[in-house]
Image (cartoon, rainbow, N blue to C red; front, side):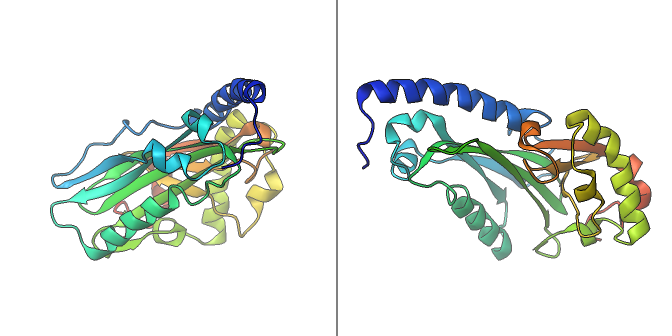
Length: 244
């Protein structure tokens, strides 16, 4: 255990980190949904909240006295009969939930949202904010997952959207209004790059295109998302049933 903190320093740091926690949470929650905001479930399929114990988190950082500023909740898919690939995916989510916490982590917050849950697909979005000791700024990022329960695999951009140049450029064009609303100074050249494809989070009647902090915008904008209805995207989707 690193004992670099005396009592007065600990008090000042705790006060600062309380404020920073609020800032990081604000960055990450804008445009996000809570883990309790769950789409209608199909019989036999659900997503359970697993909270990492405080003692486990305290052992991962030198700043265990500030463990209240470290909170990790991760998803676990439950089914009547769980196939092997879902078991492996659950284990991946469990391991990745704490893998980025270091002994220099002062603040680390991770939670998730559940989108589309059907007999064919499960969509999950993991939101994370963190601050490392002596870092100039905090950071946040978003990870998204779309499972194909029928074929037993994770779906990517080319499984969901038409990927020809015209379709890709048209989709990016439709995102521009939402991008400006969230971050007027986003990097247009980054968005326009032929290689760039945003992460996406599938909900019941819409798809949220998510942008992690610094991905195509300055840090002041944090992480954010731009939703478009599936009706708006109908001509750019390969199929209304993802993975079909």
